[in-house]
Length: 173
Image (cartoon, rainbow, N blue to C red; front, side, top):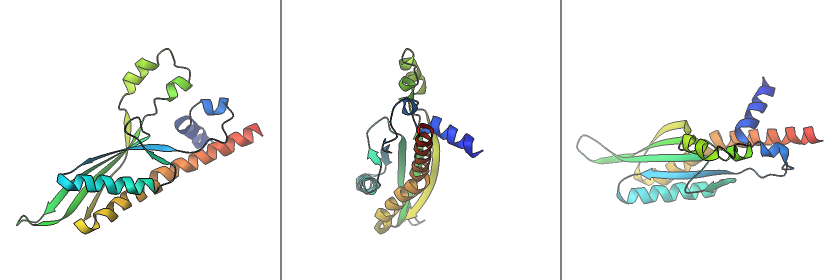
């Protein structure tokens, strides 16, 4: 079963060209786009907190498009029955985006444009979590979102990448 997992991981995580080329020295890296929906100043604050936390994660590059992951956050003021603000609710969705670059590397150059149109925006939902905090805890909540993302998604990808590189080194050895 473990053998099948490694083979599946190779197909999902690394381009086919990795086997054909001498890339056992290839560095692990994942790209991320951020989207925040919130009212007023809170939107900018959340975006800054998330970007700052992501910049502290090794192997992550923040991009505007064609990312490996998309992190979407919707923030709402939480109010009691009297209308008093009592906190902030963060709804966070993390999507794994389909890697369309694999088409060219897998030999689909002729139909690449058509395949890219068919798979544009294709992704799978990895996580949906709700975080509730006070305004003074907002920065820490954003750090926690990114720490969980690093621990649960990126570390899994790092491990699979290392296993594949080790397998390729053994195969070539």
